[in-house]
Image (cartoon, rainbow, N blue to C red):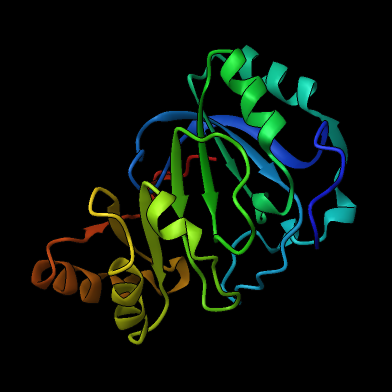
Length: 205
């Protein structure tokens, strides 16, 4: 899917104020904007209902940002689906004008748009990421689904900037199997940190 021509409207699956559960900003209050539409096709995706963009209403950027501002949040996380299927220049410009900090979670499969205070890059094997994300991203977060993912993770880490944060996160359905392996790997490779989906442990929506 190519970028939508009109950046004033975006397909919003859901938006809500909660606590960021994973990665560098875990534990931080954040307003989430989940955009509909994704063609990356992760077999273990926990929001597969986000893939079909036709199911969701197209909302104006003005309306989206007004809800974020009114939530009382300081940090806004734009996620999906794959949010960079759309041009997000106007969205981030408007969020910044409202005094909000911008964070994106992306697979890196589509060209970067928007001005971001923090980029969480989470590459997937199912659709190759673009080269630009390795040096532009603040955070690399790799989901560990099987043992081969450790070597794959290191291949990506070698291409990241020296200042980027590196996280390994167990895929939720394999959490009990993969977490001990991740602990052992991180102890042997201390450039990495562990990310857990704490919102799921704590039952936070």
